[in-house]
Length: 542
Image (cartoon, rainbow, N blue to C red; front, side):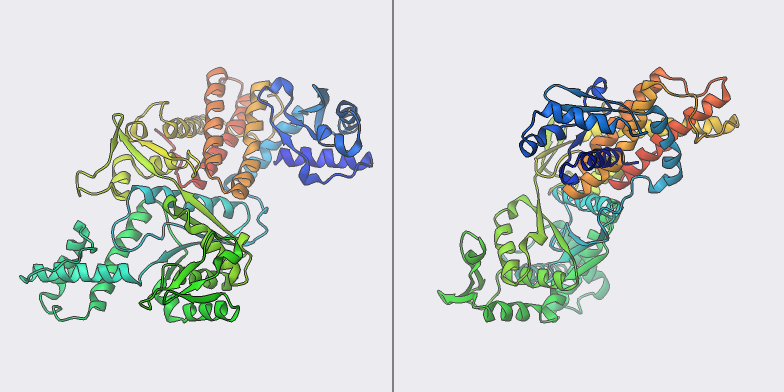
């Protein structure tokens, strides 16, 4: 039940009956903070003041005179300068229990996305090392966004772009080869801009164990490919343990092999957008709103990072996606304008690419910032975080904040088994309901879908909160803000805990108990579905 949409429909129909032309999508319906001001409220009368050149209270009175005749509405009145407060019919509200129970795992699903093809590319860390803490936040966001948009009816593809070509991979191959030489008793000559992590020695050791010293004269490509495969396996394992999977893994090397780089350069050149200066080739991105033109091919003939990225996005559009979402680190802020300009230069709508920038994460323990891993001496890895706080707690905490703000991740709080921990608090609400349902089953008390005897305000408020889930999913998908789901499920859990403290669910009255079970079952379904969207399992017991 999407009650906001119901109210919008009722208001839109009233306006049509009053011969007032107004687009339904512009009608705003909100849930008042104080339920004494109605179950829902709208300022549509004030929005219409300029259009109708009339007093907003008079407009509101006219609208109320029509909408109060709807069977779903108990009453409607006008408040303040022209707010319309709407109170739903109790019988109608409680009738929705059956719909939630019937929908079960599908409760909250919608088709607002109309099966539009969306590509969400996230993580895409270079396969030159192990994934660290900052990447975990982007991985959580991308995975959650894909879950939510799919649930809202979009056709979503989750994609990881593997930067397995270029100078960084050359340096990776050289670094591994030199470490391998050292293990074979030869002198190492590590490059200054090489990779010095413990994992590089681990790769070299694997080559030594598998091939002894037979690869000393092997070409660099062997070491590059071995290293990329080795590190990608670790990356895939760490992401899987974090609950993150991908539909597509796209290789930069494959993009190059398909001739996509030459193809995009040809398109840009034929449009007269490439020019030469200082022995380099430049793209006229200023034509498309960038603050300066960008180098494509350097004076030594090598490509800048922008060139394969342009080719990659051309490839994505050619695969038929209606919309692209890229999740980048905050340090890529200046890169967004040149990428969008490049897309427009290729002839695509730059607004069909949305870049979400990932802000930094600070890890706290005992109030102090944890900067280095005790195990590796480097940055904290995803695998270490999951090992310490668990996948579910980690995913929940990352999902509590908007992506555009810096975040403090408190390890002590994440593992705390008390209501201070929001993950524990929400999980306990679900586990508590599961416990009640198990007890009811032992007593042979069935779950009723037909609510006839419950009509108190607390129960109505709890159900109205359950019904908000539909709108929250849609809003979260369209705004691309998964934290809206997390905020909502915390509020629902809080409302349930308060409700449980005031109402006894299982009583001597079996019929009443059955109805209460139906009511709390809707809460359990909603919490479980909400947590699933943010990659968190709902505990049956705690």
